[in-house]
Length: 166
Image (tube, one colour):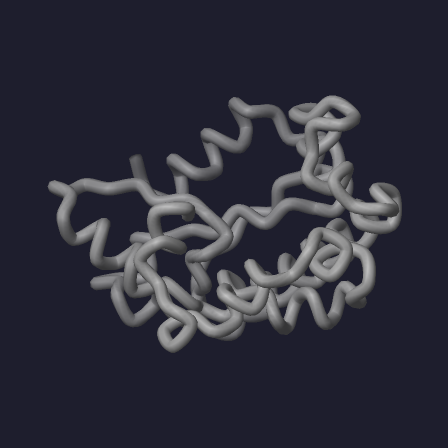
């Protein structure tokens, strides 16, 4: 993402550059999760063409993962809808994943004046984003797999390989 950020300008990615100009409290504490969702540059498709450009430079097959792969942007690029699947984390899974990979003080939320509020805002923004993805994949007839804390890595792998008929 850093490389993509460097390849943008305020004209090509205005939301990204507005986000970068904010301090940590402006980003994560003082804005509501709804505003955070609506103004988060990657969730609005800014820079998506840079992902496509990078992927076209790679030999196939390519597996791509990330929240920047918005269903409405990806679908027109698919030869068939079976080429894609979205993994949609439950709020509990997302919380466990965040807790499991960052010790207190390591996360960017600790760079704010109110880490607890920043974490709550981020969690709610992400929940709303996942809800949006769920609706969008359904509306577009794209596949999605719900990922919760009860699913094992083996079960998830099995679901993904079945989705791709591997």
